[in-house]
Image 1 (tube, one colour):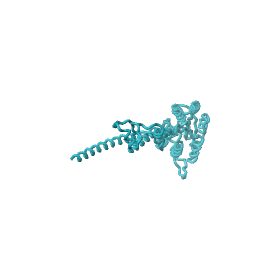
Image 2 (cartoon, rainbow, N blue to C red):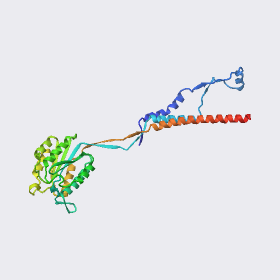
Image 3 (cartoon, rainbow, N blue to C red):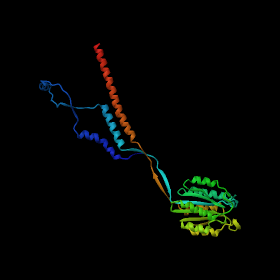
Image 4 (cartoon, one colour):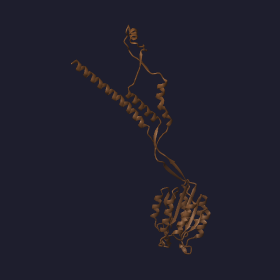
Length: 337
């Protein structure tokens, strides 16, 4: 929309009218012919002598141009501007990391999809986590994947679409066949060290148990708690399995309890979707939105129009004067002939 920064200056438009009403007219003396019988001539004509000055009367084109130029100058002083649509800037108050187990066991096809078909765990996780990322518009989100080692796949960012694309490209076994839970938490702590937000949240998903992290998971959880990192743990493996395939529910509960988070167990895609819906509900998005509307100044347009109108009038007046002189001289030449 269009707006004026100083609309009260439009009152100046009436200034010429006030000057005309309150101040005396400008008078200019002119050379006159002296007559010795001036008094008798005036008396005979029945006229009253006036002072030796005249009031200049401008032509109507100049009046129109002068009024137009004044109004344009007043409009320029009022600083017209075009206010563009608002631009919103989101400043997140929470950083959220997703640590996903992509060990070889995530290829196991024991998850039941909504259509009843069995799909690999990794496929169910990617679909559910992708929807979760899509809903978290106000948080900076990062992605960590772990197996035999932990790797940062996406840094903390508001570019959620890039995060989802990287998630879609993730495959089971890319980080090795084992499960290093402690190392994943340790990497998350390092990622959060660069964060300036007060709220730091890690969602850890795994289908196995720790198989030899350089940093024990319990110790990693204690450090996370000291650094203000809350960890929610999600177990999706089989608690009845043996060896590396058995998910360590006790460890995941302990990690969540130590850091003030929650523990969840999901056996199929529906349960997993419910878990992330719950996480979305209990971790209410907390962010600040700044909105501003850019302005484009337009005062230069009425100012330029005033200058062009004044110059145009004077140029046309000069041209008209020249044409009149040429016409008069031509008539004199015709009369002389």
